[in-house]
Image 1: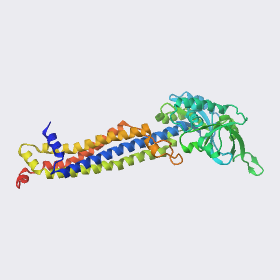
Image 2: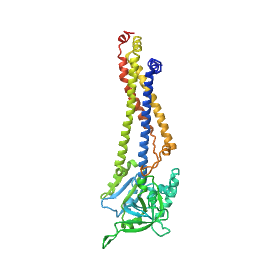
Image 3: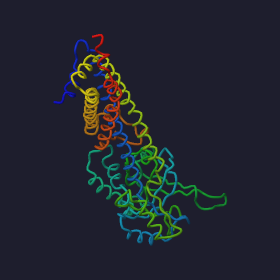
Image 4: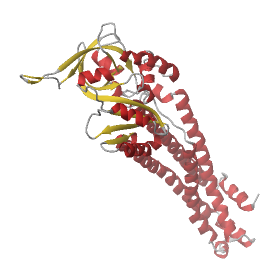
Length: 433
C-alpha cells in the first residue's frame, strides 16, 4: 500500500480528537449517497414514463400516416399497394376518421369514430391486444399479449360480419362503455350533425350500432373517447363512398419512420404527404425530455452540495493535521504526495457514497418494477394520470453516467483543499510546536 493511501485512510478514522471531522465525513458520504440514489431513481422513472407513453400512443396510432392535401383519398387502394412494396414497411391499412356522438341509455358522449379494415388493422396498431384486454380480461395485466391478441382478433373480425340484431357492429373503449352505461350486445345510436340537407338546413344523421366488444389501451384519453367501426360502415355513415381519409403504415424501425415517409412522399408525389409519430407528438415528447433533463440538473445539485461538504471536511482535516504535514515534508514527502493524501480522502468519501447510492437506487427500482410497491401504496387514477401502472425503465448507461458525474464532482471538490495542504510551509507549521 502506498503511503498516500495509507495515511489518507488513517485520517478518516474516528479518534477522540477528530471525532467531529469524522462525523462531517459521514455526512458528506450520506449527501453523495442520497444524491446518486435519488438521481438514478428519478431518471429511471422518467425514462419509464416516456417509454410507457410512447408505447401506448404507438399502440393506438400507427408509426406513419399517408394523407392527401385534397382531403379524402379516392384511389386509396392503389396507395396501399404501392406503400406495401417499400422496404422497411411492416403493415399497411386504410382508415376513415370522423367525429360523432354516441348515445347510450342515459348519456351522450362526443366520440372519435375510426373506420378500419378488420383484417389488416392489427398489422399497424396494437388494437387486437387492447380489444382482448378490454373485452375479456378487463383489469388484468399479467395475461400474455399473444393470448390477448388472439382473442382480440376474433372480436375484431366481428366488425366485418353481421350481428344478432342485424345492426352494424361497433367496438368502443371500456371507459366509454362505462360512461354510456352499455355492455356487449347493447344498442347505441351514432349521431353525426352533418346529415342530409333538408328544408330546415342540415339534419342530424342517426344510425344504430350494436356493441360487439370493448378495448383497453390503458390510457384514459383513448379509452373514453374512441370507437371503431368497419371501413364499409364508416363510408356509409360519413358519406365517403369509395374514399378513405388516409393510409396507416407500420414500419420495422420506428426511428426510421421519417426517412421512410420521405421516400413514400417522393414516390407518390403531389398531393400526398406523410406524418410520422414524432411529428404528431413532437411537443409532448420534447416536453418529457426537457423535464427529464431539468430534474436531472436539480437533483444533481444534491451531489454538488455533498461535494461542498467534502471541501469543508478536507479543509478541517488540513487545519487539524498541519503538524503531521510538516513532519511528512521534513521526512521527504513531496508536495504532490501531500496533495494525493487529501485527494485520497475526498475520493474515498465520493466513491463510497456513489457505490452505495447506485446499489440502493438499483434495489429500489428493482422492487418497484418487480413487486409494484408504489402502485400498492398509491393507486393510480386513470382520470388523472395517462397511465395505469408505475413505469420504470432501468438503463445501465444512466447508472454509469450518474456514477461518473458524481466521481468527477467529488474529485474536483478535493483539488482546492489538497492544493492548500501541499502549499503549507513546514518551518512555519513547526515553529510553535
